[in-house]
Image (cartoon, rainbow, N blue to C red; front, side):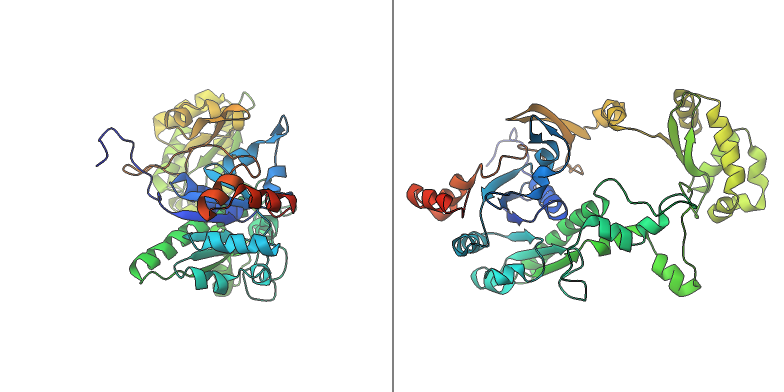
Length: 405
């Protein structure tokens, strides 16, 4: 029995995941699984590696984003396109619980390692297939990226100023949402395997659908009312005040009043209690229809005060406000620091690195960051020797032939 002093085990200890996905959505799914204890083996092309290694800023040539998204993963350089590489992958998949991939539909089948083949060796394998548009349908063969999903989902159409162009995010929004959704789907499939007789299954998840869900019920609104929702800048059609406002010292704050009581508190705080008696003030929709009046009252009051004064006054009034932060503000915020939303992790190339903590806290089986993202092929020899009993001579030959790195 472990002693009471031993740290609690994360909930996914004992789960083996093969991450053969690239760039963002699939790797985020596997990052989450690894954060909570799964053994994740990251399989990359032996010479090109994952394209994510070339994304984002670098320090001394070392990609910083890679260090976070590939944390808690062992790295194996392996060409699935080479017949010997595909055979090695098939042997590894026979011992795995989960495979996460995001090749175009039909690619794994062309290499001889499609779900039918993998399930011959391992009936309980869960195979998550992340693509731009899914495994079927007229767009299935198209290259798919988060930007396309952000455009097609309605997000870009509804984002931006009313008289401006559709607006895309400058970060991987759709990919991230898809990765989080995929991690949930994997756990559902594992739960089914546990209670459903040990059988695995194939998960078909695309980047577009989770993004559509995040945007909201625009298709339902159109189908029921014939209304196409439009851009409103930082305003909402559901409530007001809901906007960003500039303070006297040049900073910005965001105010949201989805709840009626919060809206009333804001009106009193900014010295306009008479607004509460207006019939339209009694609902979020009514306030949104009079957003010019509400924004003028809130904006003028905020513009006469510094950010610190605004935040203190809103806090005392128990009204909802937040500063608009950049990365420097975020890392210095006392709440972020005390609750460890950001943590320092030792990296063997760059030393202490600040990065996002695991996404949620669990009281009995918390996740943790064991190590940062590793160099290409750092664990190839160990994985192939330990898992497949491969000798040094065979490994050297495969390296010479470009099958492994």
